[in-house]
Structure formats: C-alpha cells, structure tokens
Length: 459
Image (cartoon, rainbow, N blue to C red):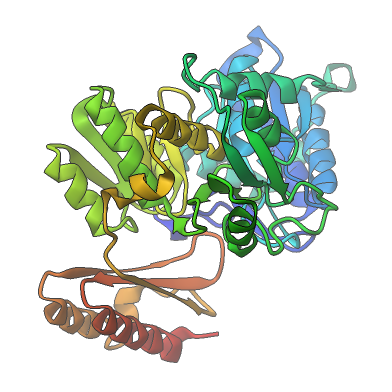
C-alpha cells in the first residue's frame, strides 16, 4: 500500500531530507532514527543474532556528523555498524545484500546543494524501505518512547570500517558489463559531481579500457553538485567537444542518477536512454513481461515507441523507489525515469548511474554506433517544467479555480498533450509539467497554472 505524502512527517519521496543541522536534519534526530531502525530490526529478527547495519555517505561536510550520530544510536540499541565511507547509494544497496547485513543507510541529499543532507534506508535485500515501514520508524522517532529503549551496557554494539568496500563495488559493477566487450578505444568525459562516486566510477571505466577525462573528482565537503554533475552539465558538454570525446557521462551527488551527452556535446536525457536500452532488451528477448516501468514524468514519445514494438508501459508516481516497487509486483526487470534513475533489476535493486552507463556503452559497442545515432530512436515531445515555491502543500483540489483551469487547458490540448502537477517530496515546491506537440501552447498553459498556484500559496 502506498501512503499519501501528507501522512508522513519526516520521510518524503526519497528518505528524509533538509538543511543540515536544522530540523529535521539534526544529529539528535539522526541518533533517534538509528535507535528506531534498530529497535524495529531487533523485533523482526528476534534474539537469534545481533543486527548489522551498513552506513555509507556522500562527500558533504555534514556527513561526518550524521554518520557518528546514527552510529551512536544504533550501537546504543545493541547492533553493530559497518562503516564504508563515501560511496554511491547503489553501492550501499549492493553491500547491504552482499554482506548479509540487516539494513543499509545512505547519508546523502543526492543532487541538492551541500548545505542540505538526507538519510535513505534499505532493507537487507538492498531495496528501499516501503512507506509502511518508514511510517513505523518515523512514529518511534517522534515519540518519547525511543528515549528509554537503550540496552544494558553489556549488550551495546560496536562499529568497524570495511576497508575494501570500494573494491567490492567496482568488481560488482564491472561484472555487469558483457565479458566479450571492452571499452578500449573510447574516450569518455566523466563528471562525478564532486560526490560519492568520485573514486570508484573513474576506476570502473578505466579498468574496462576507456580513456577517462574526469570532472568533479576533487570534493572538499562543500562543492558537491556545484557547477557540475547531472543537473549542471554545461561543463561536461564543453569538455566533450573540446577533447573530441565519444560521449559524456554525468552522475549526481550520490551517483544513483545519470545523464549523457553525445560526441557533439548534445544532452541525451533519461527517456532516450530508456528507449535505447529497452529496445536492446526487447530485441534480445530479455525484457520481462515486455514491460517498461516509468513515471508520470516520462515523455509520451517513449510510451508510443514501446507500444509500437508491442510492449507495455506502466507509469508510477515520481521516484525510483516507486518504480522498483511496481517492477517487483509485476515481475518486471527494467524501468527508469526521465531524470536519469535507470533500474536494471537483473543486476541491482535501485538506480545506479555507473551501471546504467555501462549498459548503454554495451549497446554502443554491440551496434557499433555513436550515441548521437542511437539517440534518434525517439523524438521527444516538447515539455515545459516549472517550479513554484510554496509556503504550504495545500491539496490542489482546494486551490480556487485551479481545477477549472486545468480542465480548460486539457480541452485546448485536444488529447495531443498532457498535464501533471505535483508537490516535490523533498522541497517546498509545486512542480508543473505540460507536454504536447505545440510548444507555444504548452508554455502558455504551464505559466497560467503556475500563476494560479503562486497567487494562492506562493512563498
């Protein structure tokens, strides 16, 4: 069962997120979160063993604070902590399952600026916790009960560092690339966003034979996502053209998302990459249920392409966790979203930018085509995306005249487009997306909707 966003006070679309050292992202909350997670785990496991929890992080300065606070909470409840340091979110997912730990924790605010931080929780199989479990943990954190749940001093846990965690992840990711292929002769520009992948991702591509030109591999605790990474690809595009590279790869701060640019420096977004890789899977009869799971934000052209090949497209709310949940329920093995979360469930349990890049490179190698050629597979419909800062997340149906405005807009589109409005799960933003064949019309509609929301609840 998927819970409404409003029923949770700490957890959003992708864990807990906020300004570091301000409510809710405080060390006090983190300590309680560690305690609550451990309490729930011990109740599930029973007395058969001492729980073990993997903790990883990105390169934000505040990561040290939250790592120590969560470790203290976990240890105080009688569980052990396995510290792996800065590593991509998918690496924590992989290590949690590989080491047979009972849970995994990622301390990261993904693509957000360094002043923010966040916490994501994984179960022992490497999947993000479902809404119901997050709500149970949240209620414990916010209650007074958690303060009196410490174990006796003789039962407290311990923490240790896993020194070879980076190497384990590098080997895992490389093994998803076909054994009969190499990257020899390819020149790649790789932007690691000064984030969690700054050490491991360059090694992956280099060891497979590519010449790798790096951006964003000198984190200082404050420069994560600053003028680099998947949401700031301008430097990547310039570097690809200047160095005459074959393609550019840009990860976000925790490296679970990826975007690309081709050899001409032209950006290639997640929907196009999904089309390219889904086409390859379908052609080789490797797309389970002949189905691609994506979100409400994915372009109509992607859905049209998949259906044209006899496949099915399932849409979910925004967030890779919802894509994964739907894939598990339906028995599917591939899905993703426009923002660059691309999930190959045959290999991993969450979005992995480095792994997804390898799957795309495998298609390029097999077909002996440049990315610019492959990207012609679909022609994206124009989309207009607008954000409105809001002071409250009021139900859209309660905003005066908004529903009438949307109904009128849909009539104007005449079934040649679509409208989606939602609140961000991590920020106080209303997100408006209008898509259609007529770019002038969809921009006009998006601005009208944004204006109505701004007038009613704008910050």
